[in-house]
Image 1 (cartoon, one colour):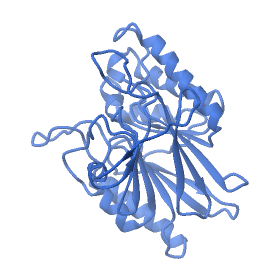
Image 2 (image 1 turned 90 degrees about the vertical axis):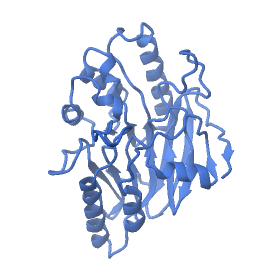
Image 3 (image 1 turned 90 degrees about the horizontal axis):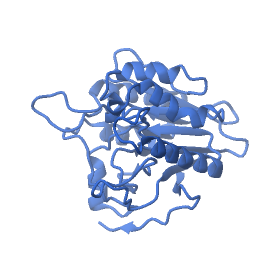
Image 4 (image 1 turned 30 degrees about the vertical axis):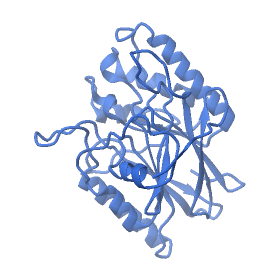
Length: 313
């Protein structure tokens, strides 16, 4: 992909859209799907993105009849508008009968999907990169997409899954290759996956953050070293996740901004009612070619930009 003529590139991150193709789980499902789509359309019209990223839990695969149809329904907003898009998978995407590998194949079958096939020997499904080129056809920014898994398969470790060592090695190798082609300097990068790293909790507890952290931080119980690898590589400027629906904060830890998106489907869980703490919406990311920085904000479903609170250490 390429930066615009003015040197900018805009990404819209939709988080936890959780499309369901059936009413079996909740008779309100069709209405909520429609409301979620309206939110996505409103954000797209306001921001006119160059790329849409679905940051996991694209579907709630155990709650419908056909998870693949749910995936198709979720990405229709991008496909119908011929907007390039990419997705990573979350814990709910593979709770049904369809595997993550099959979900990734379905993703790749779409005309405007910018994902690529998985590298051999790497865990998970949906590990790939997108390069953003400048006017000189040089890679000015790399976008890394990783599968953060679903649930721990180890009998000794409960909770959520973690990014595996071979995925980290794949990222490090790609990062080094790009740096070598850039005269030895790291190429600016962003990283997208679904489940937050353990360092998100450290950022929330020890740094000034902008936004809400109302849902707790549901990280894996194992720290597999992804954050350390990014610090050592020196290329990743920001990490973007979903998963915790009532969180939308950003905080900087050791030079890397750790950001949640804004839940696009629903936000909080209060007595089973949709008594949301804040409006659904999306995170927006604006890059400029040649700059090792980015701007980011939350666009809400009513078209407004969210005013986020400051959270002190």
